[in-house]
Image 1 (cartoon, rainbow, N blue to C red):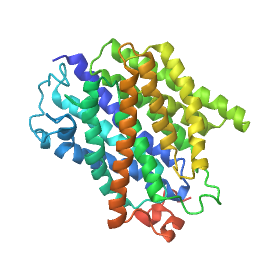
Image 2: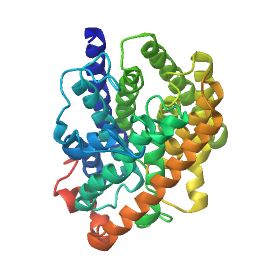
Image 3: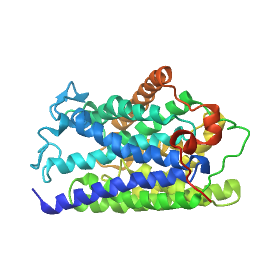
Length: 391
């Protein structure tokens, strides 16, 4: 066991946990003021629900002893056998519990990302059940395929350093399915719905950027040169993507916006995630520059295709990390472009279809949307009986 590695994984776990409150602020600032608490609550409660699922059985499904290369068994349910000794498969130099904790933080933020697609109109009680079902039937299998011992995508040679497939493409595909199933916000096409507090969004962006150093750097699972490189390329990609998005927006809309720069930065972070441990600074520059451009175009496609992805989860996380996975195949020394494409296609299809099924089941039982009256007064009062602002 290595003490430095253990300290780094614990610090990284804390950094990744901080990303979820950061996401809450990032999303909360972009909705209308009557929905700020409801939007923040989507991220906050994920820290509770995902933890319960992960401890009871989620970790075991994701990383437990393999069943048919597709899922783990329940040997580690309730964290039985997940102790303070290293696990040679996943955590050779840190306690098994430290690895479990680090991965728990990924399980928390991934479904929280999806909520940007159905912000301002989703029932809270339905969301709680959605969290449980999605983590169980979508997230855990994908984790096992990509990172689990003998997972079939891992065996194929798919490279995903910190969650391009597992976190961002899975949430992007799920967001598209959710947006289509839930439908557009009331008056979406006729009434302007600008962000109510971009100060919150910028604060959230800063926390996300900061926490992402643990997200990508911690995925080295050691305090080593790979962690250093992962953090360096993460920062480079985000910076170049923010500038790239800003320039494209400046040319297209004649003014650079704060929201655009912030969204570009997040696009750069999502795009470098699968590649962070495999590429150097030069590749990170290319990843960031391209991410800013293609994600800007992607978020504008929702108006063409007619779906209401409220906070652009599909265009930023889904499209951004798709580019990141392809870039990994192009720039990583040991990568197979065929394997990368296979991983991307399989994850998009599985996460999209499985989320459609989950949403359909929830629609037939609890219902997906709040009432029209509830949507008019806002989720804060309708779902939580509170106001975000009293002035």
